[in-house]
Image 1 (spheres, helix red, strand yellow):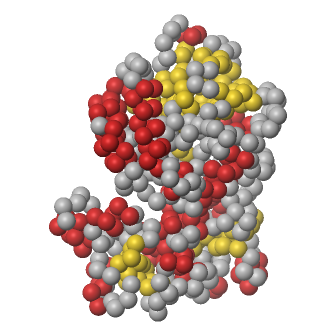
Image 2 (cartoon, rainbow, N blue to C red):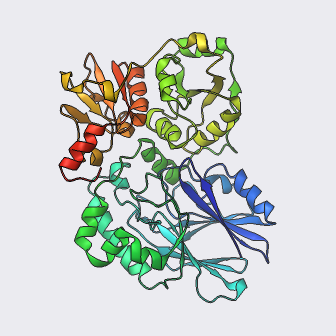
Length: 474
């Protein structure tokens, strides 16, 4: 048996390639939309992909299952446990799709895979027990847990409400998650290896560890959420629903496209390198969004194309900015340091359903068109006590509640677009966060939307002092 974890650092997402080296067959669990890389990795180990399984209808990326479904040699395994609202619609009457319920099993060569219904994060969620029959095992060696159990945390049960807009399901989902953790994990041996769907940096939990895998007994001892689930049901529900980061708006769209389907394109396109005249026409016609991917926020603030949004690349802020501020029907112009990055940027955008990347240009090429700037002040030099208007704090609600500046209003930077009507249209709008990074994204978006926002950069040490004075760890 061969097991490989395939990481997407930009989304802190893990897919798994599990292969039977005797038969040459392989299974991929939770692939992203650009499926060519999974074929390449399988081929590098002398394997061919014959099966694809999903743990659940994902919220943070477009699944690759629909792309794989076009291959007649591949069987798809999807959950049948979601009920009428969360049952996969896109497969239709395809012959090579198998819908699984709790306890159902299938084989890939001499590897046995058993579905374990583990609801709470989502109603349809499955985990997969993996047993290496070819190696002589008669007990499973691993559990692919998707967004059920992570290293150091468990899946968040609030996304159907906070991201997909299904009202009144947060607490029932939290109670269901707690029951799943106790009932489904309780009988399993402690040596079971846990193969999580995400790691540190994902918005699918609040305390995910950066270690890629773990074992069940370790989590039983040191995973606070799992311990609460086993010892205090009421406290578990309260704890798991508090402090979760606000999801970007694109999460709602991902739930829909992964349930109902998205266009099959065969992979992302490589962006064309644009001329200055093409950029000028794009701007004059207001054809779409400009994502300025330069990493240095001070450089972006000093000068950029009109209406550009700061989306630093590489790193998690690139997709967070795009997913928070760009609609799928909008064309995208990428501005960056190097054309070598353009293809990777387009690939990452493709993974969240933003396919309309029109072109790429370096910042140096369009320097004469970079006539916009974001007013910027260092936090240490900012006399916020003299502000007579509203201060916009774009940290998470949990950070804000721990301690915030007087006159501050909180809207997380990931939620600005759907809550734009709540943003005060004052003559002068200071935008700050904990370090200046999130505020840079937020201020650029607000200025693109016509607000007179300025960027307060640097550490909010006063927020830390307020949090400490109120007894909060900040």
